Image (cartoon, rainbow, N blue to C red):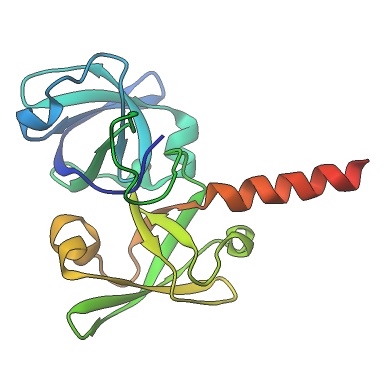
Length: 200
């Protein structure tokens, strides 16, 4: 589990095609990885990946075909900056919202403009995900926990404050950029509970 509070940024150091899928090396501040062990989960732009090797100043992770098809990972390029978050522990504050690191779909940035000291962003989600996005509800974009300001059909707006756009990749997004979306877990469970009632 994750919270959507980005802890650090990394840089994609290598991309290797292996047996039909990919292996990535992500470089980051070595101190950030203190205590990380093989098999630990790290969210990379919202995608839960497993550390399979721990070279100095970074980690290696495999990316399955399913993940390449369901997220933006297939388009990640050498040198790009990514958002990082280590898995939630019992002693870690839940500052954002509960996330699984299992991306629900890919959305696109439509507009970005200044709104006082914040940036106001408008995204379009896949139509199938729109029903899970609610005004004042939570959504994760590239692993960043955010609050939705407004929703119109499959489009939604939100603000990112200076700290967020300075310390995550969201401030560098341009119109048309693809992003990983993870909708609120509670919405998905509620839908399933309602479906189960109808089956009785």
